[in-house]
Image 1 (tube, rainbow over the protein chains, first blue to last red):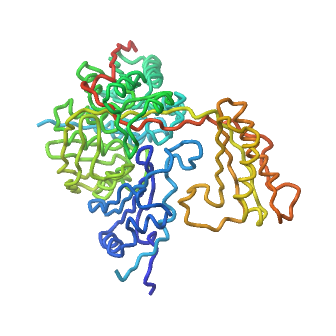
Image 2: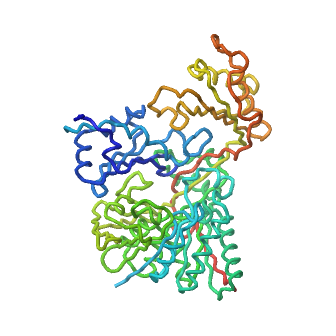
Image 3: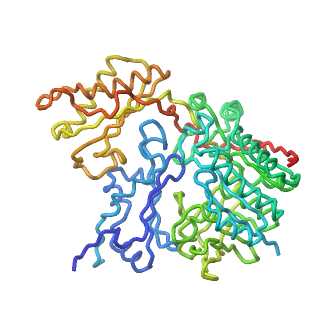
Length: 109
Length: 452
C-alpha cells in the first residue's frame, strides 16, 4: 500500500474564494474527524508548506487556522493587487486551490 | 422570551434567480421576515466605480417580485440590503422604482417603503484625514492618504443594523438598503423583536448566503433561521437539503479569513465557543456565540477609482519554440509599446493561458501546454489611446524577433483582427474604516407610502 495519498482523496471540499478585496482564503474541509486529524498530524499543510507550494513568502499568509468545529484547515493569502484590478485574472479568487489537490499526505503520520 | 423567524431565499439577490419551490415552502412556514442581501465586493471594483450592476435587471426584478408578493400576502416585512450589487444611491433608487412598479402591476394594497443611502461624500472623508482622525486601512493597508482619496470615484459605507432598525421602528413594510453588512440585514430584524445581540448577529451570519449553510451543495434555495429562546436554529427548506453540524459550522468560515470572528458596525461576533447540535434531520441549533461591542464605532468604507479605459486583445501560439520563449515575445511587444507611447500613462497586462494565466506567479506547474492563449489588456486615459495601446501590445506579438524560429510569417495566431472594447479598468482604492460618533451619520433614511 502506498504510504502517501493525495489531499483530494482525504478532503471532502477544497476551495478558494475572496475574503474581502485584498485576500483569498482557502478551505480544506474533511467529512470525518479521523481524516482531519491525520492530515494535521502529517504536517502536509502548514504555513511553510503552503508558502513553498505557492512560491510566496510566509509574510503573505495572513491567517492559518485549524478549525475543529468545521473539521477544516483554513489559510488566507494576501493578494499582490486588489481583486479585479486590471491584470488580475481571478476576480472571485475561486480557482486558486488547484495545487492543493495533489499535496501528498503521509498516511503513517 | 423574544423570538423571531426569518427566511432567506438568495445569498446575492439578482446574481442568479432564487428557486421558487423551496421559497414557497419557506413562506408557508410563516416567517416574521423575508430578507436577502443583494450585494458583494466579490464582483470587483468596476460596478462600484462605474455605478453599474453586475446582475441583469430581469433577475433582480424576478426575485424582488417573488419576495414582495409573498411578504405582502402573509403581511410581514421584506428587507433587502446592498441593493443592486454595490448599494450605491442609484442602485437603491433602481430597487425602490422596481418595488413601486411591481406593486402597481399587481395592484397591491398600500404599504410603507423605507430606504436608506450609503454613499459617502469624499469631502467627509477628507475632513477626517485633515482632522487627524486616521481613516484606518484594513487587511494590511496603510491609513488612507489624500492622493488615494483623490484617485477614488465612488465610496460606499457598510451599514450595520442601525438604519434597518430605524426604518423598522418607523413602521416600514419593505426596506431597500444601500451597502450593508450581510449579517446586519437579518440581525436588525431579530434585534427589533428584542432578541439578544449574540443570537441576532449569529442568525444574520448563518442566513446571509441562504442555502450555502446547507448540504448537499445547491445555491439559491431558501433556508429558515430562528431564535426561540436558546441560541439559533437554522433549517433547510428544500426537501433534498439539510442543515447539519458540518454544513452550518463550515459556513462560518466561508469568505472570511477567520471562522471565529465576524465584524460589523459597532462590534463583532465571537464564534470561538460555538456549540452545534443536530435537533432534527434538517435543523441545527447553535449556542455559545458571544457579542463584543466596539469601544468606538468605526464604519467600513469601500472605494473604487478609475484606472483608465480598457481594450482586450487575444493571440494564440502553437509553435513549440515560440511557446518556450513566450516571455521574450511579450517583452518585444511591450518594448514596441514603450517606444510608441513613451512616458504617457498607460498599462499593458498579459495573461498567458496554458502556462499560468489563472494563477500567475503562484502557479507551481512550470511546464506549459502545447498551445497558449495570450490575453492582452491595454489601459489608458482615453478609449482611443487604450485601443492603440492594446492593438500595439497584441499585434506586435506577431512580429516578435526570435533568433531561431522556423516560422517567419507570423509568430502568433489571431482569432480576431481587432481588439475588444471592455469595461473600464478600476481598482479598489478604499478598504478602510472611518470613525463616527453617530452610527446613523452616513446612512440617511427615507420613507414613502406606496399606493399600489
